[in-house]
Length: 141
Image 1: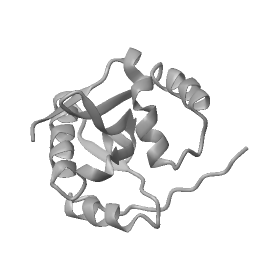
Image 2: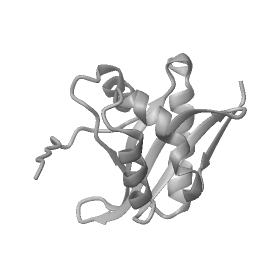
Image 3: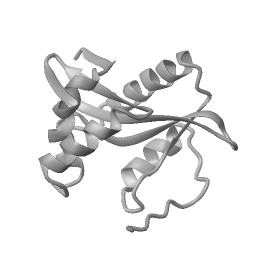
Image 4: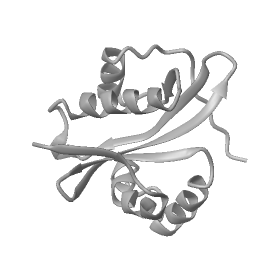
């Protein structure tokens, strides 16, 4: 299989909504996601995707910032690869592409959060060389 990895144009951001809905088990409406993504693309955010031909099969967000403890950093967000494409090495290929892409932009570290119960992702990220630095907390205001 031949896959294409790329950063999508901000005007195409709504094309990722079906994959985000799968990732989150339809937690939010399409309308709410459209509103949020419209705001996100105006911030330090890019969206990387994977295509199999013309079919969108993978997605992740990239948030850019500078942190006092890690320097120029990119935070990988909402990583999702369609179920039928998992466990075939595609995640590794995608992350290798991401590493090169963000290094070329001058970033020196990559961070991410993953849900506590998502054990397969933990193994993947450990194998990719990520280290656990702490816990992620969230409070709704």
